[in-house]
Amino acid sequence: MQLGVMIEGQEGLTWEGWRQLMGCVEGLGFESLWRSDHFMSLVDGARESLETWVALTLTAAETRRLRFGPLVCPITFRHPALLARMAASVDALSGGRLVLGVGAGWNAHEHRAFGLPFPTLHERMDRLEEGLQVIRALLQDEPAQFAGRYYQLAGPNPRPKPVQRPCLPILIGTTGERRMLRIVARYADEWDVPGIIAPTAYRRRRERLVAYCRQIDRDPAEIRRCVSTAFLIGRDDTELRHRLGAMQHLMPHLAGLDTAAALETLQQEQWLIGTPKQVIASLQALADEGVQRVMLQHNDQADFAALELIAQEIMPALAD
Image 1: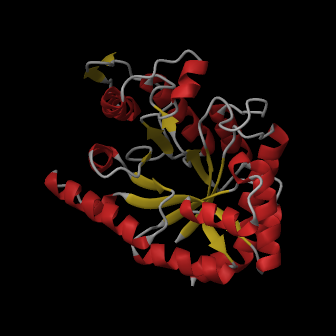
Image 2: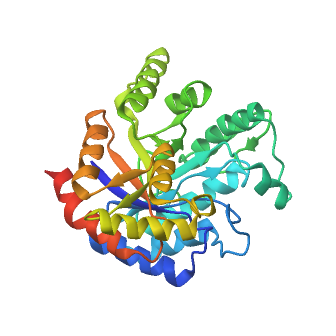
């Protein structure tokens, strides 16, 4: 299993903080680095919110080894033709390290605030399915043609093309078990399950994905399997409680809760919690279910010691 780091870039991240995080994650040996794609904080509107694709361009230019990408770009934020062009350029700039995460979009308030249309869930899924076809077509070497309900192409052949062949990998994230998982089966190179760390819950979705792949005669092994989850780690109870206190300052829904109640809340939200030994056991259980990568959501941006602990004690165990 490989480990990546994911950060909510709309929750107070600065450019200096992003540069420090890139250097730390690459230097510690993590496999990948990921950014949420939001236009504003989901907690406090006064927080800094860095534009995702500018941040990813910086990652392409200033790192040498990391794979990276958005978790995930709502199809409602950017026209898929624009998204394909940006992704191809950033992939070329990085030498072939981008993974393009795409989703249907979910935050109605954020769309209203920026004057972006927020269609029904059914239409958003329709747009996602069409948009994925548009993106695929534009990333190929020949002129692209597409005539859909929402998007049309009349022969563009944009350049540069992605470095990665046969195509830049597309990641789709969903916990759904019906239509979204069918979209994963048909279009995704990678599948992320956000916030599901219970092996039985993951297994149920995995088995359904396998069934959907078989219905369209696709080998399910072609789809890389990932999980993204927030985490809380400490060498002992004292360190764990210290980090929990930091989370209570960052997250209003935890403020005022006692330790037991705060931990119970995070457990219900499917956080990865515990000492290195306990975290290793949880990750190994996911590996046994076929998970190939876990993206660890790093909420306390200044706490590089937590990442160092993971690199020193957890990554070697998973490698072994």
